[in-house]
Image (cartoon, rainbow, N blue to C red; front, side):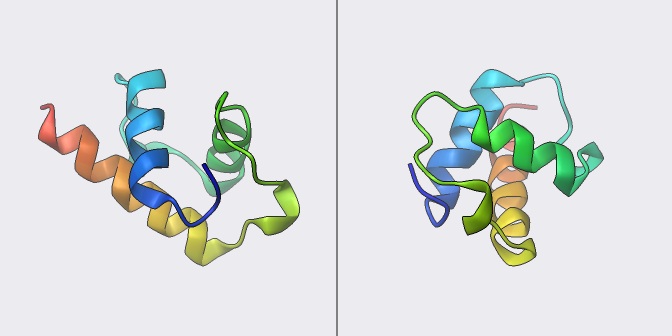
Amino acid sequence: MRWDDYEEIGIALYQAYPEIDPLSVRFTDLLRMVLSLPDFEGTEEGSNEARLEGIQMAWLEEFRDHQ
C-alpha cells in the first residue's frame, strides 16, 4: 500500500483498530498508525493533510459499515 491507496488503508486500519472511531484520531496519531501497518510502503515524507484526510474518511466509511 502507498499513500494514495485510501480504501485499502482504511480497511487495514479498521481491521487493526476496529474499536476506534476514526474521527477521534488526530492526524499525528493517524500518521503513526498508517506507517505501522505491515503492508504499507510509504514514508513519513510522503504524507500530507489531504492524504491523511482521505485515509481518515475511508476508515470512517469502513467503521460505519460495521456499526
